[in-house]
Length: 234
Image (cartoon, rainbow, N blue to C red; front, side, top):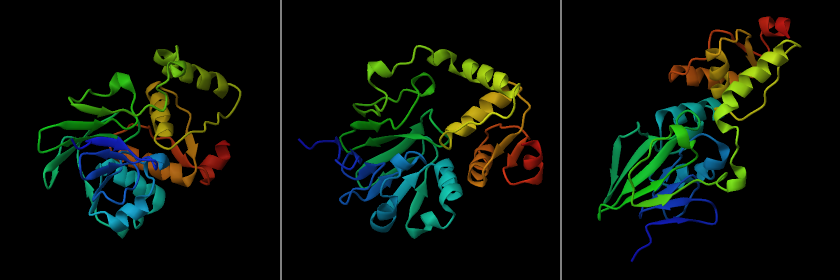
């Protein structure tokens, strides 16, 4: 019996006969980029050159354009799929499903000719990620070890807000993080009615604007670091 899912030494998650997720595989004509973090974009250049198509959500494409420049993905065929939209390649059908991580993150589901459903979760937060019915599951487990379970996980947003509020009483608060996660933090603070401007480097500004175009509310106090108004505040 053919193995229907595997993970290669280079980190490619293989689904069915045709799909490789989050790293390049020389023998797979379909490459999926589940989201725009570097560890899930391994070998995208090779995939653009050699695969028949590279698949991602529209938001992921927009984020990559903001991070790499709009010409970076033009080196090969790219197809964007909305959540739930089907793409059929030969005897397999691919759909992407929402995962709660950063903007555009997708779970990848392949249904083969035997109607076997093969799912790769990509990165996700359990509480807000919908469960997709599947027969074979490949789960992202970077923090899967029980020692990684944080007892304060349900309180972390409130702790963040409190920490920032306390820090702002003393001066500017500096926050360091990955793109996508920074914008989630900004949304949390905006929804908590913290009125202090967000002052960010140009690349983070561009990513933030993509997030806003896709519906994320970050408020009106978003400034580039080198703007005169930002320098006055700092």
